[in-house]
Length: 547
Image (cartoon, rainbow, N blue to C red; front, top):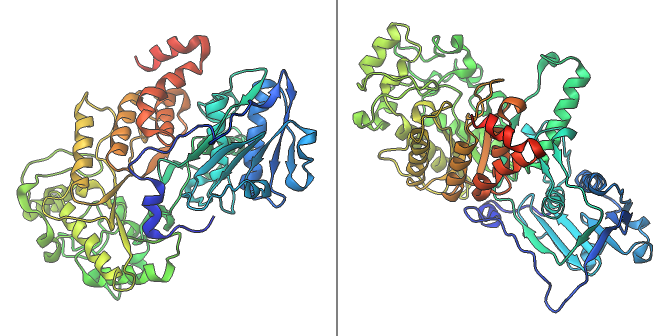
């Protein structure tokens, strides 16, 4: 598939609208059903291109596996040059960019990344998607391979075979049994509802916690398979392409602290340096002076040196630390005491006095969350994103800036308006346990508040970093929240993190996953699907998790 230009990404992806779901008769055709398996015997073969990509081969293998598990029949996988015409089989499933697809006039031109076409023509079923070269599995955190053909296969398996995948591994596969598989008319253009979706998948150092290296690697493989089956993929790169913390400033201290101390936040002790009360003064978490013009220019220079068509954004995401600068330039950008004290990552409640002097007193008292007395710094950071955007557009009139709404700058701005050329990754400031109704309303208020600034929004939550091995249940709340965000412009997700708590939080994890394929319906569909996968135990399992 050819690359999609930056300005057409959102239009092509249908952001803010439902993915297309069309199954219809082709004009003027009344076709008999197409037989894949009839009474326990193969009637079809799976055909892949003669020179196939990894994603096309893997998609064919996934199709073969699930059909075999469903009816006990293994369909042959044939490279196109070895396929023996219709005389050998009654039908064929063409997976990927085959010459037969070209002859049938099927093209992926104009499909967004990871989109797919499923079309039946006579006794042939074509499943073809917007693909790219590269590995399909492995750690998906940094994987940029487009896998549209694979997602087309999963679309087929879900709709025709009613397959579901509750958790990684064979035991998590729910594949209804049947003796025959036939396909009626089918003409569908499937567009991923989210342009970018990631469930941060972890690796473990030294096989920590595992019985053996083989056990760890086996689980990581199954986890990667499950993520793909739930349609996790990146159609475009966002914040995570920078090392370690996803911030362009991660190594700024070692690069610039001697020559450009003005790049860094002024702290209450008059130092421009890492905060010794935060992460033991680790320089990778140094706060920045976002009002400094030199910093904007340096950020844009770095962007110009590394940008590609796959990475069109100017990444403005600050290091993983609250805003802390008390430089006059930063303070001048704030909204003043119209916003009261806000907590940091831990949502610490405090006095409603917003005061630099109060912040200095707390700092001198070694209060690690002294910065909360600066109030909400959202206007400050929004101004920063706009200034960087203006600088970048001197070199590229189509530049887009992307930044966080996080810690003490997570609330919507008071004075500053943004535009569609600024993308905000919202990190909501609350976690489980969620008080009935209050967290939901708070999330909606945050989301709509940022949306009203004119920005484009994607969700970068820490919802899943809760409970560890305890049986927590918030699947219903999280699915409602995600469906709400999708209805109000969410075009991407990046969940931190997939911690593997399947026995304790299976419904939560499954609800998050189902958002990727059908966000509006995830509320009604996800939990019934999950419980039904337990067969006769469905009702006791439901009662257990919802207790």
